[in-house]
Length: 209
Image (cartoon, rainbow, N blue to C red):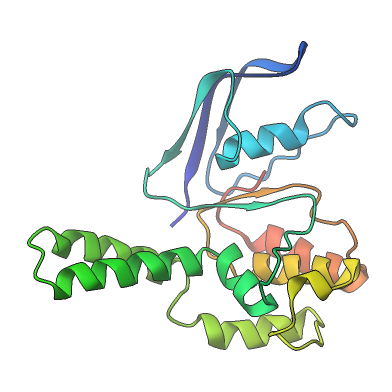
């Protein structure tokens, strides 16, 4: 499933400085939109607002359908203390969250909760659409494709900048989101990594900003 991102009247300021105001934008399936501007213009801020990681001063961001999943690749490597590469990739692709929701609804269903049936069905659909069923199988293949020759149980915080960039690329290639927000995704990638990223963007049916 691909999603449409609809932005209406979006305004954000940083302190006394207005970054953008009254922004209207529609990003439809198949669209690839590049944000161009000098440092400090608000490109990363806009992506964070679209991803739901920062609130806007005014305006709305809507996903259609509302059940769609949006993937956000931040500019800085996402390394959490105590998290392994394997666990980090599962979290970044949304599989961890989907698995937790599925487990929770399964417990409700097993307990005889009369309202659990529909919620479990929705959680299962989400887990399947995000690639939970074959995640482990695809993980080994994608890690090999990006040339990441490390133990997947290694802590994310132990990785070099180049290795962390490849993990970010692997997470992108593993993911099955309905829309993508990529903040300077070429950072620290070598020529092979850039080729894989370019292929991903060219083949994607989901919209990309």
